[in-house]
Image: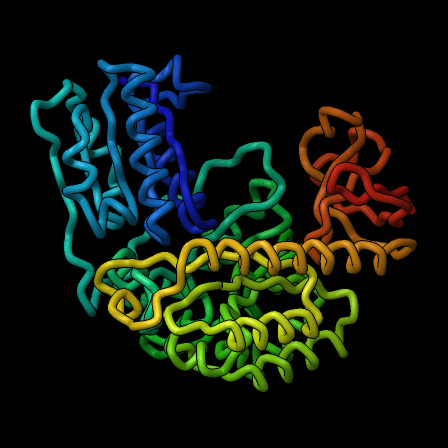
Length: 434
């Protein structure tokens, strides 16, 4: 049996899948390493959302090889799915697994001798592919648990390689979602974070078809589940049913991440996004009028091919006016095999950097304004399993995704507490028990 270190890049879905791989490895008799120095097997769960992600994946593979040249190195996941040869050509790599294969990782780690040439197992992600069930991660000391209920994507955004990396949209059947959520509740998790590549597509492929609001309603009836958090929803995925559920269901967290990507309609059309800025304005107005303290953030891509100065200024003003409290800003990254790769009007790196900096500054201003608005208010905070190392205070996360520090007894570990906000310290809100 081996001592295995797993390094995860990218999204929350990758984090869930790394936890699932860790559980399956432990069940097979392997041990998880505390550090690179104590490992003899290195698993890098890669990301390919940008060229920078590809480069970071390669660098971490090489770092593992430097840490232990005789160690067994497996590169798995999205980058392995789309460009397996890039990873197979790194001297010292022993195993390359695609996204379907990585979830059977333990079966590939029966022979751990270094190889002259890596074993590459990357299957095609064709239409009709079934959702691959995985073992729910074993209970740890965390308070909040990810639950993967959807994978793949059926959209065709001009900039994205997700369809190649993850395949078509597919869903975990409702009874299995409920079974896994109930298991997590029995293990002491009070918050479930529903995750997927394109969460709003949940259920469309099932027989009979269903939708995200229906499964969330059923999850809300489970004993022990106090909070349900939606990881990310595109503007076009807010059906009347899901809007009503977000507003009316107490268990649904009042925090949303909405990847809008641009605030200019011409750029949105070029990106192949299926909504307009007017529709986004109406959506956010509906949400914030019903829930004034709701936390809403967004992804923004700057420097998309053809984005002129006027397009960018339109986008900047749009995001400045929206009731958002944080922005994740990404300079456009060319991805071979996408429609945008060959579009005219490629924007220089210098211009992308300048535009990114302006939007990042705007995001910080919005975050600060949201924080000021919450001062003096009360939040329900789900406390973590240990204290903040620097302050010694309890720490936790509110339903609108504010990280909070507050004094209290150890008996509140992994419990819900009512806290009044009184200040801020190093990016955390500071509160007092009510």
